[in-house]
Image (cartoon, rainbow, N blue to C red; front, side, top):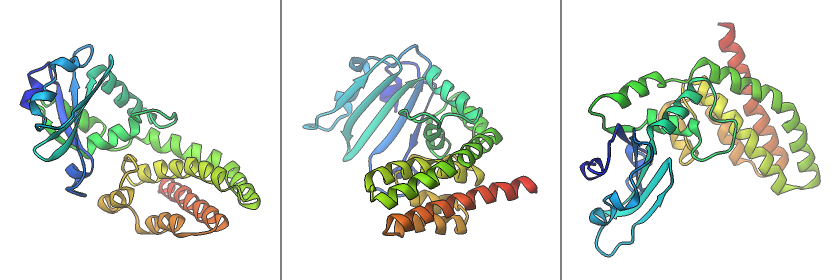
Length: 253
């Protein structure tokens, strides 16, 4: 990290993903650097060539708000992402308002919040990162309210559309629609359990790691254990009904 600190002002840096969470030692190291400069340091100032193993071929990307360095260092595949503080703060603002998941974009602000909250601060001399993380550590009530309302509104339409797909044998369309609905269920379920939905890689390990309710976990697993479209549709609807019932029970307390 010292090498990257030398190429521009660094507010803080953190590690995220499967290795830093302890899920595996066989994945890439994902490191995120947040900088207060107007744009990330240009590729030529970032020490990729110096850090990369001899004979490896590092790759760099760059625009006004984003930089990426992919390299091999001491046997590890390492991805170092550079974001401006302005962009990172805008994601945090969205998440605090219960947003950052409605539109398809990369990175998804909600996933960014999850990676940051569950990540490991690597550089944070002024404790800026710590203060931001504390401010978004748990999902705000607005996220539960908005995601639950969206699920309640969308479920009847998806329920009918998935049945129509099953009747016609439209497997591809079924799974396109199902993916949209299941994502919405996951967002609401994780929020109700006190967590942001992480990026879906190793999602089953995340469910176990975060200790999500076992009844919900069984219903979630059932979706992927089914074979026919009719069975999968029923499993998805039951999972959605469980999540909505959980929200109603929490609201009544």
